[in-house]
Image 1 (cartoon, one colour):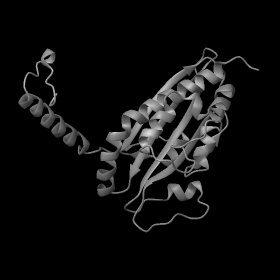
Image 2 (image 1 turned 90 degrees about the horizontal axis):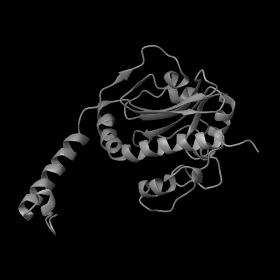
Image 3 (image 1 turned 45 degrees about the vertical axis):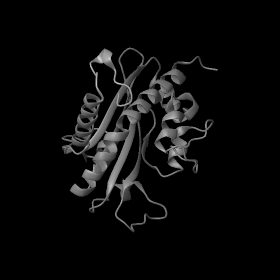
Image 4 (image 1 turned 180 degrees about the vertical axis):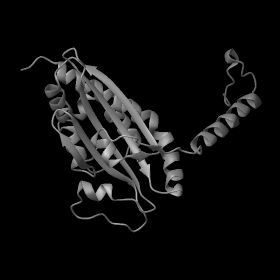
Length: 231
């Protein structure tokens, strides 16, 4: 609009377009710096609750699948990047178009996505067949900190020192009472101190729309695979 004012929406002058731009920048700056309230799980019900019982950032998605839990669980294990709509496009944008090693942001098309994640920076925290899968990773750590060579789920749970931001994601399965399965996927992030929380809040509010879209498309890919006729 600074180049060519859009009269049809009421922007008739470049000065008004500049005002809209400034207001937009201010709104974005305020939004990115809003405080992130902390949530505490009242009653531990899932494996995700065990590993991230308190958090400041999260997203939650669900879908109903017309298939039993056993097939849905297997579908979650087998879904590949090429089955998830827009996954490779959004992860390409996320990494700035740069090539890199194999990871969840640069996943090969023909390999199960959870397998790629576990072999490239994520830790499998829990795996209850036909019930729940939880993976986790560090999205922030103090300068100079180095992880153990072979970290265990208990090591992840024990990180509470300042400077850490822990992220975990699950897939949880429940029978829906009509022969199908309700699948939920939740991501939680816990920052261990106020400064880390503020830094991560800016990042989270930028990447959240793309992240939420990926999660929804991921669940739809699980549904398609689980509901497909058995070979």
